[in-house]
Image (cartoon, rainbow, N blue to C red; front, side):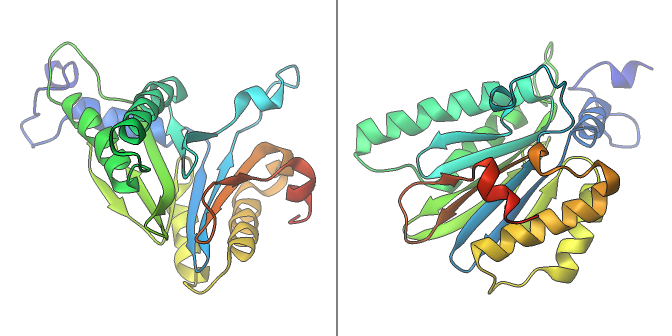
Length: 229
């Protein structure tokens, strides 16, 4: 019993149980899909089924880190907010100091370093959230995901959250590097429609993209989203 009460204690078989529990928390969260396309990068995030009394704009699932970087998350979204707010500050400090936009990998590395520290120190718990970062660096779009342990990798396409393994399986079958952003959005929504079945509702989704020839990300409104139904 004692091995699962601390994020700093290994079990006899080499596991950190608090980290593994946090990974299970991530898989309870609504999914997000990231797709790197020939002309940019797309994030499609499922906000989940919300109370109809909630104003939908207040429950956004895609966050602006800087005008050229966006993020989404799965798991405990209040944990994600803390990490996103931190890297927003880092991004603005970088602009003031170097008069240039921050590199996308620098952002994901900063998030990952903090998450790793919270698997080492006593008296804290791991961040119960997986974060996806998409953005543009030197004219090329990049897509990263940071896991609970603080590892991060770059992807052509990735899913986080509930049913992530099923979604990743479908991405492996259907993804092609030469697709355009509009095709990437259609692909992501079609996969979510297949996974969610009768629960699919276009109003559940946030969709944003950044193109190689643009300096800022763009978020689709509800009318634009309906064109992909």
